[in-house]
Image (cartoon, rainbow, N blue to C red; front, side, top):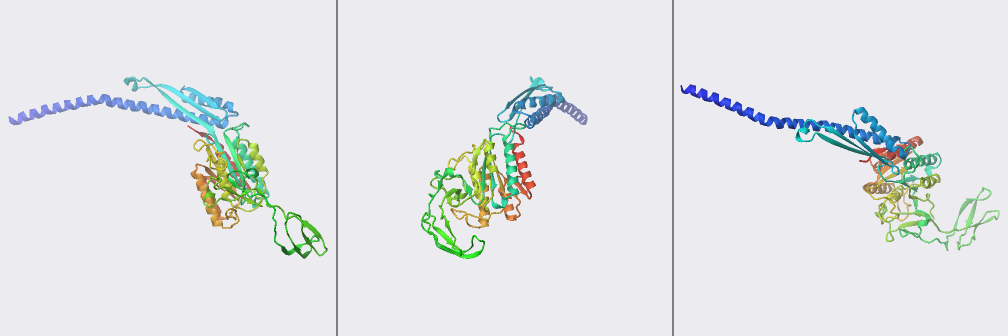
Length: 456
């Protein structure tokens, strides 16, 4: 009897528990189904928005790359967007605007879509908004400085072809895509170098230079030796030089032939040396720490400050000549000085850091043969020269400037390693063993600098 009552109680308890479970399931089923429905809605909408974003990105990039004129940017983007969205079977509201000056195109697309489960919560539709913008080149204002090796080993076909390659690059970076319109947001500067850099005679009295006055020596040592006379016969001659400003130095050969010799004037030709270490790896140059002018040195052609006139840069490139030996660090330093906006620098021409894309191209065909002797560059410590080059390169990169380095017909493994480290990573270093390689390197850099890019 007791057992029967217990069994009956257990049966009733089981029925109660089953009822409780059913009740609990009924209570959570509705919100669970709602959550699953919302997840399904969100997933569908997220996929659709991703597809719209991809379509906008592809379309604006295509417009920048293929427009035949700045005015065609908008129409190209609209045509591509219309084609892609019709293919997808959707009809968003599309707006396109373009800046003909910078070559920038901006597109937006808004699509209102019905929802399935979100409607239950009072949101029967939702609007998907997407936006994309593209530009040719660095994606905004760009300053570019080219450090160009003009040492004696560049003479002949090497120099001629390098000039053409650099000139072609200048044409490419200045032009809007598919047009002859000059991009006003691009500026280019040039720094030819050998073992000195020529800043230009106009800066003789600048506050950041220290250049002695030209002078005529008042005393000159007497010298003697053997020279080939005017009959092309070896014959000992004696030279007496007083150099009092009068052409009274002469030599006599055995035919009693006398020729006046000018002792000359010590002059400045625009060539500069280095400030004391370690300031020879920094931008600033002021009256308290000026750049020294080096007398009686003939070096590379004068540098060209940043300009938005391609003819100025191309003219300077075409007039370059090859002479002297190699010290690379000053070439990179002065290219940095062209790009810098530092008010304590010689020029402060560069655009603001952060809003200006700054690029530096270094092209050299040899290893360092000179190093700093302060203020001149008459030492031959190759290791010190390589170290100084890396110091400058690292500071340039730390200033947010991207460096491309071209080693043109360079066999020395040490300088190849140094130039590789100087560049902003392996993709930015080019080992050009032939003229064709060098030309190809300039072309690749040009394409990289002008490639259509998404900017937001």
